[in-house]
Length: 499
Image (cartoon, rainbow, N blue to C red; front, side):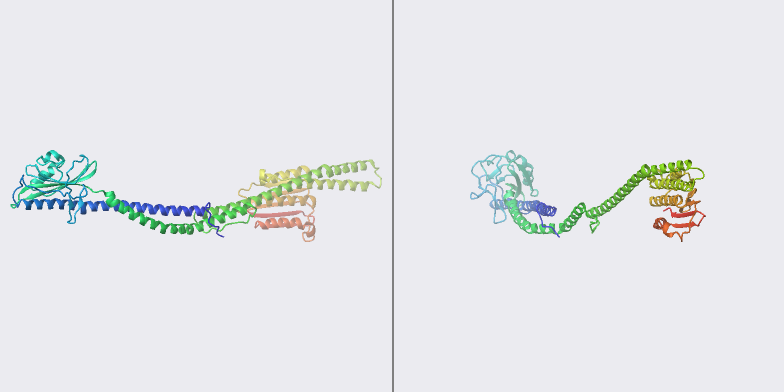
């Protein structure tokens, strides 16, 4: 079941991150659009509106003064009007005739203040008329007042094509342009010099664009924020659900449900985490099983050791005492005493019981397969039986490489069972143990010189031990052969694959 969206949960945090990415993307797009729009609007206004109108105004002044002179020359005594006394702005205003309204300025303003003005300059470079006479006095040389525009003015007085220039001042950018005044004979008789500061781009362009983009940005945020939220919830739902299933499985496994697994749906990072969880769970289950088996095995070995000690310390000592008493009693009786046969049988029975007890103690003794290996363990068992029971044991035991642990354990148990049966039931005095490699198999042969038996007639007496041997061999896909007859001993042959 999908958990509810919580503000502290992973899905909520990822959804909020999607919303923030959406908002940030919208803001970045707005900023980029704003910058592009400002650059485009500024360039368009300067090249297509402001500059053409400044040049158009200078041309209108030149045409007006040329008409006023009737194609003659400029007169120092004539009146040429260059400024409009009713202009509202010192920076110039847009005119309905695609030009600018240059103000007529009667006051003197600081030199660093950008003001729009127009000058009429004679061929000798003197100012004949001015819209700002307080700063640009009539009769003064233009080169003295406008040294940075001297080349521009001289080119215009020579009749060269109209040009303009842009200068940076403390008050901002200022554009200067000139226009030649022609006579009827198309000779230059003067020049119009017009200087106009660039309008306030922030107020003229930036603020309208910013207001437009802010409005559109608010609309985009209103539209995209719910979309980003919905997108975040939808895209994170599957991921969060998979992580939640993984957490649930981990909790269940930690609480003891060792069969808990998760379904791997994809091969992404979460899918790898799911695979690792399943692998970890299987390894833990296997490790727990092996630990339980090892604990059970250790418990059995400890119990066998305890029983072996009890038998050795109690019953074996009593049997030994009984044997000593029977031997003393037999020695004390007269040779013609009718009790001597019974005492002799008692002594022989006690000796057999001691032999059986020693064989049982050897069977109960823990093996050292893990420390010594199969070959050395079998040699140690053969030596122990030979020493403790006085049996002649012949061995032909080879070290078998690349033999798995299950096969080694099975061969060891089969050897122990076969030796125990030979000692306790067949009363064998000689044993032969052979462990040799045979191509892709390993062969174990245990033969004794005991009294043997008919397997069919004695199936009840020896069936359990033989069945255990056969089951061990069958589990490892091996072969088991038993050969025995009354009075001819017993031979057990086992072949197991090495793999």
